[in-house]
Amino acid sequence: MGNCQTSKRKDSTAKTTLPRTQSNYVIFTNLNQLITYFDNFNLESHSYPDLSHFLGKHIKRARIVDEGKSWVAINKIQNILESKITFIIRNLNFETDAALQLIYSFKKIISQAHKMIELQTNFDEKEIELFQYIQGQLVQLSLEVLIAVNTLIAGELIWWEDKYFEWRTNYIISQFGIQIPDGPHQGSTAPFIVFMLVIQTCFSKLTNAQFKDSEDIESKAQQSYLTKFYSQMKSELMAESLIQEINIDSTQIQTRVVSHTLQPHSKLNYQLQ
Image 1 (tube, one colour):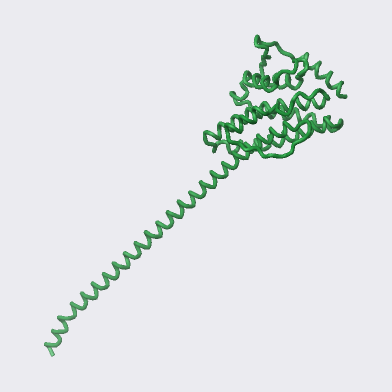
Image 2: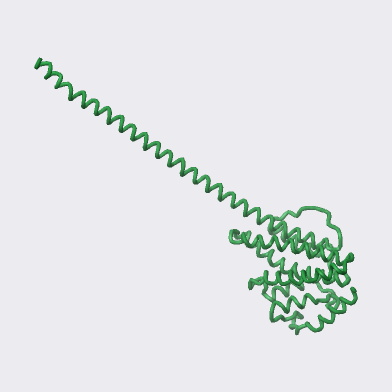
């Protein structure tokens, strides 16, 4: 089954290969052509290039991130991956099981990413920079997962190694202060799982920042409300106290006036007697 699948993908590659530029990169007229090309990509025919660099160049040339097509590309690739699940389940073995786990792990990351989109409008400048970089990494990761799944399904030579994602992981750690949780990760897809944890940690950092900002805003709002409330109470109490003082003074004045007024009448009454 593995050899048969490999043969099919090689034939498909030959049919979908497009003209190349002078710099030996394929020119794609639309996003679907790029995704189809890499869904049928055969590393052996390309003498096993530095795939990370190779994909990064194509993504940049296609202006996927620059033109805001990141999630269009990611969702298209995710649909292709999900369409392979039925075949994988019907042909379970060590390699296809690894492919299945890789697809589910990728779906989990994408689900978290969609939640982050809802918070994007509240990001500060540094958080926007991190989120945009992670979006670009997700586009490349989705293509890498697609190629890796096809490699596992076909039973071909595994092209990634333990340090495949090392440079990108180190860059994220150095630029954005991400701390990667330690843990044992075994199996052929371990480098992918570890890098997905890196992406997940970035999302956690952004989410926690948003929650912290929300808590700070709520706390400031509560403090502002209490300040206004106590200020209003103080003003009302002062006003009430002033009114009481005025009333007391008014009463005293009235009492004095009445007392003063009564005195002459008393004298007059006395004299009349």
